[in-house]
Length: 162
Image (cartoon, rainbow, N blue to C red; front, side):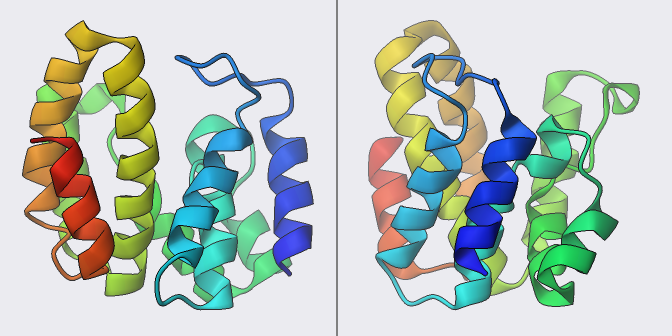
């Protein structure tokens, strides 16, 4: 299932590039999956890590994920997908809405989100000091609701925003 998810995510993200590194976008989901793999995890968590941005960034729908990878993976991806839209207001309002959504997520989804924060923090901190200030403040607030995720990853994510 993991190789199928990797191929699916690679096709879905296509020619997208990471904003700060200009690497193929799939490098990020692979990095997130590898971070998740470094702690206690399930196969579904690895698959969800590979697919975590697919709903926000591609035409793929949650139903597609459920059909191809099962309800458990789809549920994790749903928890990891931002629920806010520009209709909800400015960035601060949207990030708070997404934070409240993640606060209700199961520990497995929070562990994947911590891995996502770790990978994003490294590239943003190194590449965009001005945006890092905004991102850092958002992540400090987000860490408050991710404490049920893996403790090792929480500590690692927290150390990156110090």
